[in-house]
Amino acid sequence: MEYILYRIIILIMLLLIGIIGNKIKYIYDKKTSEETKEKIVKYAVEAVDYFYTGLNDRDKEEKIKEYINELFNDKNINVTDIEKQILLGNYLNKKKN
Image (cartoon, rainbow, N blue to C red; front, side, top):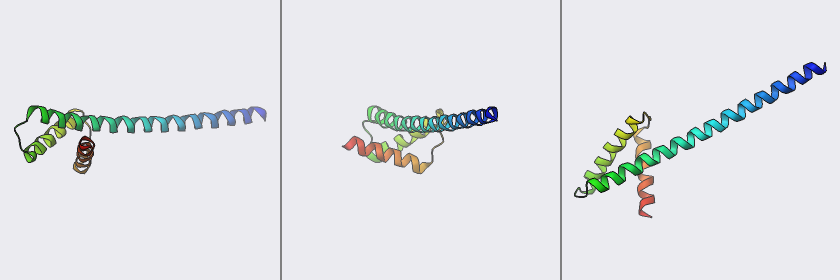
């Protein structure tokens, strides 16, 4: 009887360790993914500001969107257009402040 109880306790502990490990991996991957997306947007904005100084704001915005699309595709990161607009808007708001 003690042997069965011992095995059940070990099984429960292993199950909990597995669940906790998966949750930590999920949180880490999500955080890393968000940081990567923010860095891509930052890089795109800074590159366009540096290389295309003579463009008006509308043309700069189009170039930034082109760079963002290209960089996300190169990294094989799937991002919706709405998420790209939100990321760009957040970065530009941070840049203004």
